[in-house]
Length: 140
Ligand code: FAD
Image (cartoon, rainbow, N blue to C red; front, side, top):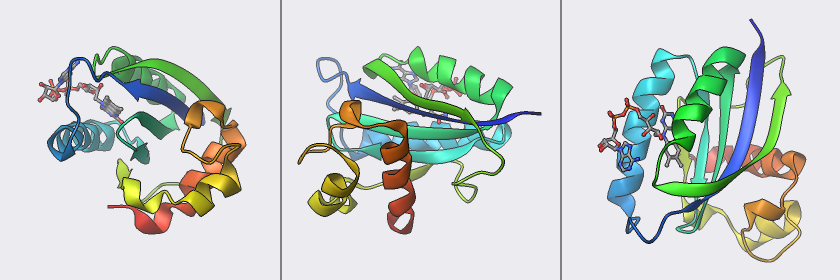
């Protein structure tokens, strides 16, 4: 079995959904349930505009999960930042950990991004992973 990590970013579909805590809770509830079943682990970061998500697991299950997530009209314009084979998981404790917006500080963004704002479309796979790892301590 090949273990892989996929990191992507996408934009919230504002026209159709007013995204608030309830919408995020619904996504997390479904994600945790499905991911546990398929041995997927990872993190989701959201700042009311962009999603940044890492999913890890068997290549087959990661690909299937990503395909399902891509069919979801609550977000769009997804870009895969990184897809790699890994020897161990970085987020093994979370079927889908959530990083609250308040923990994505300006200092952290400047450290890992090219801009002052959280703009994951401008991040490399390495900096996106570095930022997610640095945020482990803030996971809800
Ligand atoms: P269901 O139990 O059938 O649905 C779950 C809930 O989501 C229901 O309340 C349903 O009304 C609502 N819902 C489902 N699809 C839509 C839609 N297109 N528009 C509005 N509401 C909808 N799923 C995972 O399994 N793992 C993940 O890691 C994961 N991460 C996600 C990250 C993001 C940013 C988004 C937007 C979605 C994510 N999802 C994830 C959800 C995924 O897109 C599918 O909705 C879900 O996997 C469907 O699983 P299900 O058939 O068990 O859900």
